[in-house]
Image 1 (tube, one colour):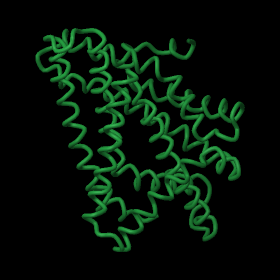
Image 2: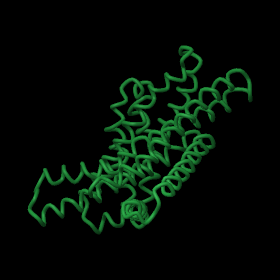
Image 3: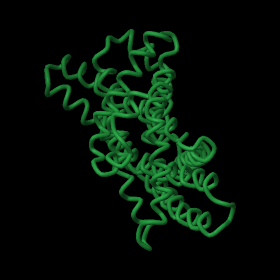
Image 4: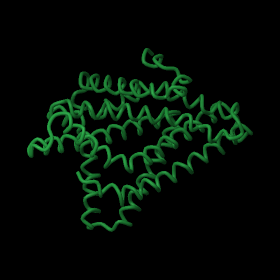
Length: 285
């Protein structure tokens, strides 16, 4: 396909920052194609179109990382850090694209294009507000957040294992939700600044975007990072199942390497749960 050939996987690992404009392009194209072909269901179809564009590159990355275990040093499990910037810049590119179009488009178009994501954000905000108002015990909320995030991590692992690089769907969905959270906060703050004449123009947009980004990315960075790591682990296991005999030496080596990644992902979710419960609600929005 044409989009797949824009950047090979080896170049993506060596110069991962190039994934930012590429992911921005993929997500933007997905939005316009979704609005053109499926205007009444664009909120989910734009996610699927973005996934379709990124999937070949993701599959290539999983294969490359699985093969690299046998050609790198004895500390190969730490060498997977080279793949993490790939995910980070890809995620940032998608977030920037979705949030930019959320702010640029008129309100009626935004309500249609991001309808499912908006409902998800409203539910998240209600939970955060309950913790802030002390109507829900913080420890109870932390446990609920942690269990939900662990469930998502399990889905990431299963998607990656069954579909090879299927975790890209969950990562893209999370990018669209985070972008809507940022864009919605930015819109509200821009309106507030305009009404009180505190800020206008570019400073208002910058302030609104920054506060929205801060509230959701304080806990979002370790949480999304956990899903990156889990998706990489599941994809490597999937490739190993296809390429090696079950439980032979090479398969065991991949399984051992992936288990370290899964433990790392679980630890990141513990950190994310603490931040979401005790820190994120303190950010004024």
